[in-house]
Each structure stands twice: as C-alpha cells, then as structure tokens.
Length: 416
Image (cartoon, rainbow, N blue to C red; front, side, top):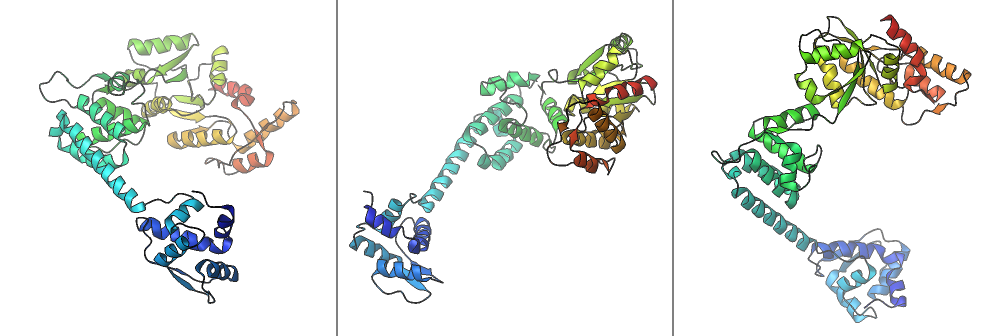
C-alpha cells in the first residue's frame, strides 16, 4: 500500500535523505535483510532534528550510530506501519537484491557457457583445440544468439574431414544467409563478423584483423569471398604499360578521355605498372576529374570521392609500389584537411594548391565575385604540411570546396 501523504512528507524530508541512502545500500548488499549498523557523521542541525523525531530519542552530537534492526522495528511500530525494506520501496525506487542479482547473473553465465559448449560439441569444431580457446575467450562478452551463430558459421568453414561440407569458396552474403537468415549478417563491424574473424585468426595462428584489407585477406584465407565489387575508385587517364587486355582497355579509355571505375576485385588482378616516375594527381571531388575529362587533359587522376575508402587506398598503394609519385588537392574545410593529412602523409604527396596562400587567394577571389560565403564549422584541424593554414582558415572562417579552385587545377593539369 502507498504511504499516506503526511507520512511520506515526514519521511521524505531532507534531514533523512542520508539515512535512507545509506540504508538502501546496506539492505541491497545484505539480501534485503535488516542487519548491521549505520553510522552517520558530520550531522547538521536539520539531520539531528529529523533523526530525533524518527527514532524517538535525542540525537545531539555530530555522529549517530543506528542499528538497522532497531530502525526496522521502529518503522513497524509507528504510523509508517511497515519494515525498512517496505519503507524504502514505498519511497522509491524499488530495492535490488544485489546478492541475488549476482547469483542469477552467475547462473546465467554458466547456462550460457554450458549451452555454447553443447552447441560446439555437436559440430566438427569440437575436435579443434583452437575452437575451445576461442569459446572460452568470447562467451562471456557475447550474447547467446551471436555465439550460436558464430559456432554455426565457423562449423561451415572448418568441417570435419571427409564430409560434404568442404570449405569454400563461399560468398560472404551466401554464408551469412545460411547461418543468420540475412545476407548482411556478416557485414563488417557487426558483432558476429568480428567474432567469426577472431575464430578464423585463432585457427590460422594469426592476429585478429585491424583494418579492412586484413579483414578481407582473413576472409579469403577461410575460403570466403567478401564483397569486392560494390565499392569503386574513380580514375582517369591511367596508362599501364603491360600487354594484358585489362591494361589495353585502360589505355583505350584514356585515349578517348573517359573515366574508369575500378573495383577491389579488379585491383586484385589488374597489373598497374605505369611508366617510371609517373606523377599522379589526386583530387577529392568527382567534378575535378569530370572537368579534366571534358577538357581532354592527359594527366593521370585519381578521385577519393570525399573519403579515402579501402578501394582508393588499395589503388594508391599499388601505384606507389610501381614508383608513381602524387600531388593532392581537396576541400578547404576541416574534414578536407583531415583527409589531406591522411593522403599526403601516407604517400608523401605534394600539396597541390593546398597551402595558406592558395586558400587566402581563393577566399578573396570568391568574395570579390560575390559568391555567398560558406561558413567554416567544426573543430579545427592542423594541416601537417603547412602550419599556417589552420590558423588562416580559422581567422577567415570560410570553407572552400574544391570546385572553387577548378580553373587553376585544370591549368596545372594542362602543364603536367
């Protein structure tokens, strides 16, 4: 039953708040049983008065020691008419038997582990020592459904010798559908994908993957083909020197001033040996590459399309390994500077019209042309290649997309 208004008002007075807070902690730790004592120190006058009224004895000093069984009996004998646990529940929030909660959690973990071990034992993984180590490492931090799906997935990748379930090749979407019912069940960064990859790494004695390329490599090690066709990198005027039909096709598209989208799948097998010392320009926005094609420029271009995705870095890594050098241009905003830092730092690229004087000139020209300014927002990012650029951008407060420099960039491409 709820407390009547007068009793609630009395119990809820500020002078008793420390008592109830401490009592709640003690009861929750003692399986909700009224045992032990409460010692309140540094009592102020309001607390002494409230405690005196509640306990029906004078509290005059700065410290009060209260036996919890006595407090429980006192509450039952007064207008409160209920014990300490019921009183605290009425005042709210509900009490939690922490000991029981811990016991329940321990029992649940035990059930979880037992069920997971039984699931593992029913598969060929039971004969794999690494599988038991993997389960011991991960079952506590993984939901029951996810660990079950992971065991099911790994059992398809590591079947018993001589069975029909030979490993791979699997499409990742097909494998995900088979084990989870969803083609996206093993997408990157899902808990299930991370758990399965940890198992594959353990099986092959390697470290868990730390980035997209190592994730894909590990999937392929287990006979799983990740999606390598949906993500592309936009290129222009790449002229590899080899004799294959793929290289000939790239040269022909370059001759006709056509852009080319390359997938990760193509990059895994495409020879990309360019002429020694080829200088490749890298831009952030597709409009720059489009304008270069429209004006029949012949300088090789790679577009990051706003972010250096894995497919972009894979291409640039390949070109760098073949001896290409790079120049980079992007947006004059904080995300643009972040991306520029990444590309310039990774490939020792030359900043391409990306210095403080270039920004100041473009900002001034934009203003004189009457173009509405685009506010620069977000936290400041320092340009690793030019210590003055960040300060100047912050001072002017104007963001400039790459298209603001389009005429200048096309002039540069005509001269290279």
